[in-house]
Image (cartoon, rainbow, N blue to C red):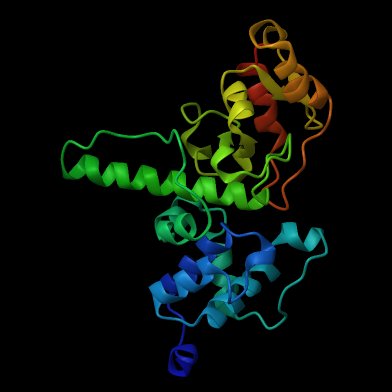
Length: 255
């Protein structure tokens, strides 16, 4: 295994680690974490080598630096080059992602994911690309929120969804952008998707007048009214963009 650590990193290996970096909370970037171990096995590296590369990427992350989180200081030029070329290129990172690594190591398959009926090799390839993109987006959003609903704090993985702020159909360029996502529980995800809730520019929960009339009073008070006007718990990175929040509030919300 020491020989694998000494050999030079390939560009593809580094991109795969960067893709994993986007799908893990900062506190999980260590050699004992299942997703790190799984990726190390997939690319023929040691978990320690992958963990070190993850921490190097963290050192380059401006969002973490703003929060006072620092990584290693001996970052290679290759690390910097891969970061500059690929961080923020969500489609490329989704393609490089070993989707089963995060999905199997950390959480169940997303419920309600879009399915495309395969009707031949082209459609099968398209379906695989869409599912890979969805898996990357979900994992990145969930990890950024530390797998907790940003409104209620619910942490049951089976009840959590990665919600698009600007809907999937509205802007293809934002489909895989984790900044266009919020971690919500299934009830709030459905309400958000249908415009029954929204968020202010200060990320405070806003309620549609329709809600109170359409659900039982106890549910309305406990799940919605008590959270109204309270800011969400912000993610540790991939903070939602106010322009996207405004789009949802003005174009989707039934205010």
